[in-house]
Length: 233
Image 1 (cartoon, rainbow, N blue to C red):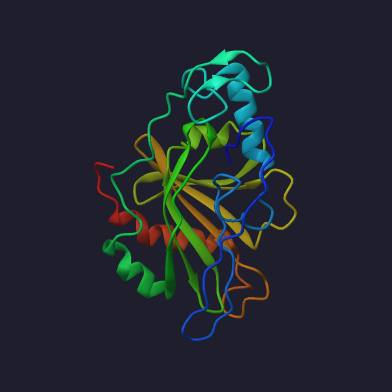
Image 2: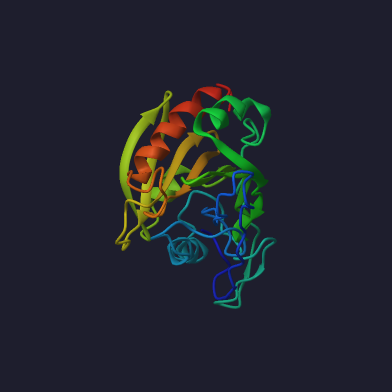
């Protein structure tokens, strides 16, 4: 995730409420700002901090020299003036929170929808919602202006698989030093000027899905969602 270089923030926990069936609430994982919702197992904040630090120093991610804050100003590491980021906003051609998702949510028995919008330093954005499956996995699905090349260039993450889903490039990845690769997964699908991010948490204690590979669940879910994305997005 992108965070302000040189700053330390305390992560706040956002939890999905108890379902009507009485299922226990769980945190929803995402890659986003530190002060949004928590990461899946094996995903920590230092991965995006590394790539942001490199971008601030070198401007290597394909956009202009960025300030390590939301509006330019002074680089807290060097004390020199820097310009605002040239990142475009998160893609708006597909809304994961809209009613078009209902058939997918019903088929996966996902409920307790909550908004998961957030903004990060450097102009990064995430727009979407989060859900939980009773006795199963939890997921956030959000559009972001983080592109697939930006993920590949981030040495803090290791790409596990690259594939095409519904005619769009996609990849799954974890933090480079993660030990448990089965119970958390990040999957991003290419959009114009960004991507659609699926972030899943699936502890082994989950009776319904805890014995399943979480990236397999993510790919199955993405295969249902991607056909709903307009071709123009």
